[in-house]
Image (cartoon, rainbow, N blue to C red; front, side):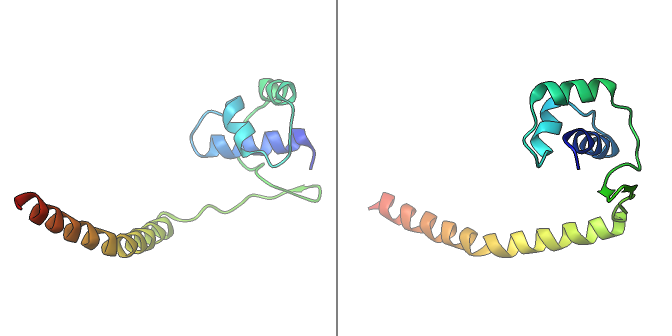
Length: 106
């Protein structure tokens, strides 16, 4: 994949997320080192093509977006894992607060 193809694909992905592709957003997502003038000139002529988000050989491939219920399930799993991970930390904070209160009353 050429630098220009990657810029166009990245811009399309950003646009598909409902955001306006900017030089900074595109540059941050590129996998290849690309000079800023190339990014700027490509974005000036870029036209949104929602299906052009991946290149496999010479053909265009439309990536399937996860369904909302899949996203909700993933978000629930992440929330559960985060809560489980911070539970011991919250308990430790409670114990430290108790110890501090004891020290302050002495």
